[in-house]
Image (tube, rainbow, N blue to C red; front, side):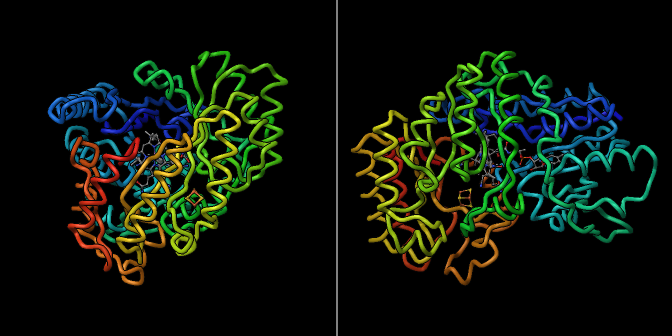
Length: 444
Ligand code: B12
Ligand code: SF4
């Protein structure tokens, strides 16, 4: 079967989609002909005018359509986050041009909104929930052999105008059994040199933060074996000589001893490359951080979220401000570049409390850390999204309108608070946003 997998153009697209590469690898292994249609907008947002970025977006949108038409696929798939929900419109356009082709959407947004997607977008035939590899394998088989879709767990579809959500598929326990992602289907040269090579050493997260859908999306935490990860790293170093490899694990250090084994393995194998991780402030100690540094880790993105212990507890982050300060200090002493990510406008946050977070962020900045600031967004699949009232949050936009606004969010100057809480007025939110954009290093 001929399959086209689309990574929709987006304003914030400096890494390729590993998810599509994984699906493509599994399908190719089963003998399918796969293309990944990927037209990244290679811009650093903020450096170009909104008009230039919009032009690039429109042009790449057209290029995607043209390439899919050239491919003449039997099945067209797209990945969709809440920010690239417009990918479903793209499927609509393609379905008109290629009416025989079946269409499927997957990814973190549609996993939790399958009913909505299928009821509002007649051009989407299937939604794949959670991990897509084996579900897509079953779907292609069923379509080729004209088999029933009933037994395909993890699949949502329409039958006689009714939406059917088959039971969830089991999680992929043995991640080592998956082939390496089919990066050869992507033109990595179109991505910035530092961020074009990515790797996932694990899936999911064991923590219950109320604003994050990672534990729901991946249903727990599963790691690949150290040997399997080292094998992929050796392959990547040999094939791409990457300037840097970005680990995209939701939270890199969950098992400190595994991290140390991985780091020692990198050195024993003589794998010479710089790498970055996303992680938390706990699960580390000086020795494990030193091992990371010795093995080439140079950049650490830390989910810090708030400068207030009460908020950290409300959002179930499971860390404290003193842990944050100690870990950041230790990381900076070891020579790591530390980028601390904060969120403003938490449930129950008052103006004073938000200001306290901003002061805390500035204090960390004065020690040498870089600061990233975000306004709270409630993503489907999170506890916050499911319990707006309980958390005293009022969405400014909802449903389709919200996804539309999110899709435009990376146009310079377009970022705006999307939720208000009972304790901070709109005017105060604008003030906070101004403080973030003027005082922090990065903001979205
Ligand atoms: C690397 C990364 C990026 C990269 C690359 C994005 C990409 N296209 O993969 C960059 C830097 C560009 C990026 C940007 C952003 N990201 Co980001 N990113 C990640 C991260 C850390 C890893 C993604 C990954 O490779 N995962 C591993 C692969 C195997 O999983 P996957 O891509 O989800 O794919 C699997 C399934 O989703 C499914 N699937 C996915 N697509 C499809 C398509 C089909 C047809 C099928 C059948 C199945 C399927 O099957 C795949 C294989 O199992 C995730 C968190 C995470 N750990 O997943 C956040 C995450 C995806 N990002 C997120 C966000 C919010 C953003 C940004 C808005 C930036 C920001 N402020 O944080 C932008 C928006 C960009 C966009 N295109 O929407 C959110 C999305 C939430 C949501 N509901 O939309 C996530 C989930 C983080 C979080 N916890 O909130 N991101
Ligand atoms: S915010 Fe980080 S630690 Fe919390 S659930 Fe998400 S990935 Fe895990």
